[in-house]
Image (cartoon, rainbow, N blue to C red; front, side, top):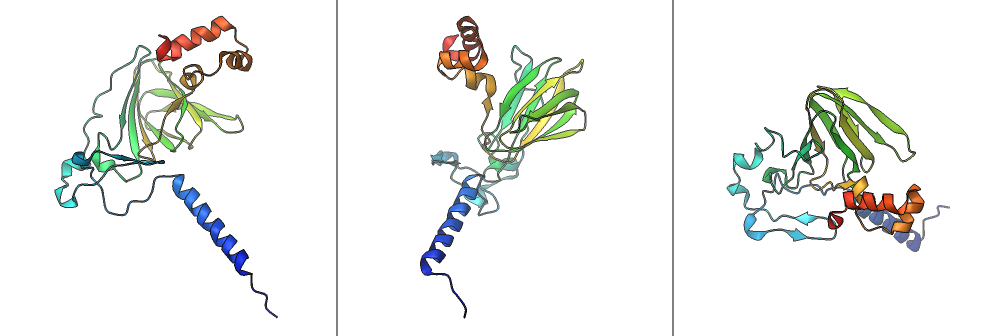
Length: 226
């Protein structure tokens, strides 16, 4: 005699499958439903809970220029620490919209660093165009994966993991980074800890630092304290 699952059990299984599918969909950029979507500046953008929607203009109005970007030919503006970035997203490169990707040009003067940070919504691939860069990430088990990568080499940083870079050469280094989200997000660890307003007593206990030391770090990483 064959036993068939009860209707409540079937309904439960279907509900769980739908929930898992929805969770997976929210965890990454949605797949495009057309060849491309060039944002229409007339309509601005629409914010939802999980993403920003840029309404498309008619595909017949798209031009080759929408799919070419020339803004990474030269370095961006260097900070006092010798680090410069040019982030490229659909807001400056319309052809990227809905394609689930973005990229960055980063330049580091000798000794400069890209401090520990992570992207909550994207995996990153970094290609060294010029120079020697100490590069790495830390996994959820606190294991460090790091080495010096040279011109022509590539390193991948898994989604959501803390990673960093430092120019260990005598000349400036240039890196091109590609991310698999058009809105990867960026959270710099020092700023998140000392520049976000976390209770001072908690920070003192967490890091074994004095009130004076915490104050110094807060003035350095919290723009409101400068």
